[in-house]
Length: 292
Ligand code: SF4
Ligand code: SF4
Image (cartoon, rainbow, N blue to C red; front, top):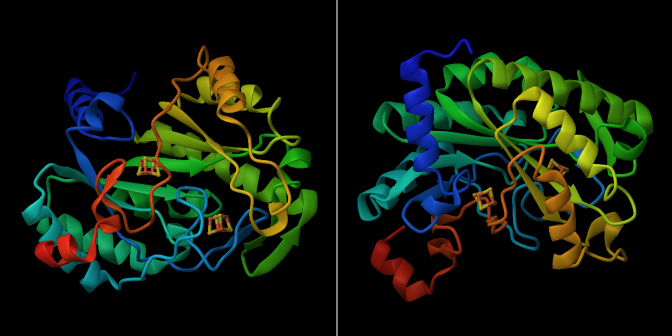
């Protein structure tokens, strides 16, 4: 309600050109992920830290970490070649807010490409502490991974959190994470960011709880929710992933409360191009032509 007409128009324009927030944009507009954030401040039980952050990414891939200057150079090359890329995001391979390089990179990108949409995804632990830095960076779309709004359930999914120099486990760790996530999401929505929530569907743990998360997101003014299937690795190596039908049933139950993203491709933290037509996955030959 406190947004001006102008703010509302710019939000409409950025949603129209963001392939993850709007399925009609996915064939027309692309995004580039810059893999500048290797460290993480929590340990999810489904995470194998050899690979990219599962909260936003595809299993079993390791993206090469770039420094901010290299990330800028990559962006310059890719945007020159692919002007349909309108979104520059940082999603890993760890938690972007646990790495100062995230902010340095956004600053460089903003200086050189003032018109692109900056996008960030995080587990949310450091969001209240860093929200002002996120806003100052010019980020306008934010994804937070929120797997539970009950710390008893959360504790079955997160192993520990590192917070203000200490390690917290079990329900205590999950409570700290949850409090920060909710406060961070609230502040982000209040500041006018367009917020997406990723929720990893873990059968036997949160499948009946996700609808409660959706109801909460409705109250909080979150724009869209992305229910992602569990990737069975690390502590969940012997678990069973949800079937597409199970995932769809959860999404259908949540749809009345918050719009559902159903076209997520679980991209790599260094992906670029159109969703599902990831140029970083292209043949060596084609990539050399693009010279990235
Ligand atoms: Fe792994 Fe991402 Fe969880 Fe960190 S937030 S432990 S990188 S899945
Ligand atoms: Fe979009 Fe999903 Fe890919 Fe993230 S992982 S860029 S939300 S399609």
